[in-house]
Image 1 (cartoon, rainbow, N blue to C red):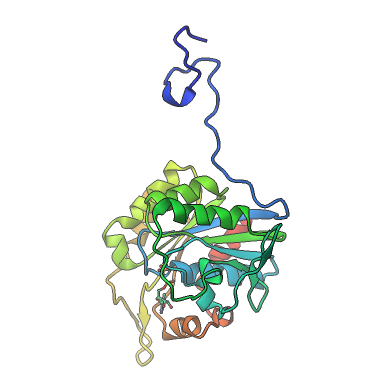
Image 2 (cartoon, rainbow, N blue to C red):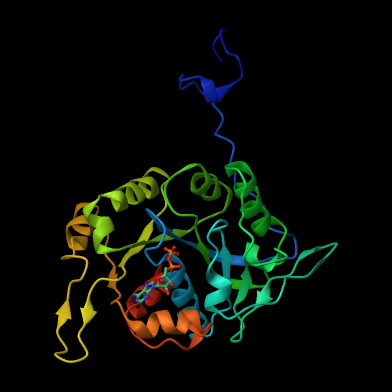
Length: 275
Ligand code: ADP
């Protein structure tokens, strides 16, 4: 140990033998919880279909017989309960809060299950929002979960950063749209994952194309895709593309996402099992 040692390794650049590892900020789950794998679903900005992809991935995993959960960390724009047609409130006791089960048995926690009125806005500052997400991890009783999908707050700001540091995320799925790729926002999400050393399981380009019901041709409403360029640049193997489809928005609006049909995410879902 050097004579000038202040015992504060965080502020010292010396690589001496007494250096201690940085303290982990990962929070512990409720003692009654058991979550085997955590997959964060992220996007550079809101409205690209992040909640849709989170819901579909969870539905596919549950269909395969895995015990699946969704932690809705998008506190200011929670849309998961609506997609699953859930209107009831979460209950709890002195041991913790119980997630609500969807029709097919997916465990779900969202701020909308706790608010008195689901149209009330959440007008909270960043640390409170991040604290709420942490509590969804620490205070909710997640019962023997194989796969937990986390619908992350959009962007690469303070709240998603805190969530990433607090939850033991095993891998991420990036959701984007053709427009977003042009603006390079998705590259920020890719770089954030790399900086945090979290593997990227795949990228989903949502609203990628539209199939005309008359001529059956694919039309690129938001312009041609640039997804292959990005994935090649960052060596990301899995790409999934979801079309703009009136049936998708219809099942979401009716709360029937568990009935969605379409094989767009099947490969990505299989890949998650291999990782
Ligand atoms: P985000 O979570 O990124 O804010 P959402 O998943 O809530 O976005 O999607 C925003 C809206 O767009 C929802 O009403 C959803 O039903 C609709 N939507 C998303 N993707 C598609 C698609 N591929 N085809 C049709 N509607 C879509």
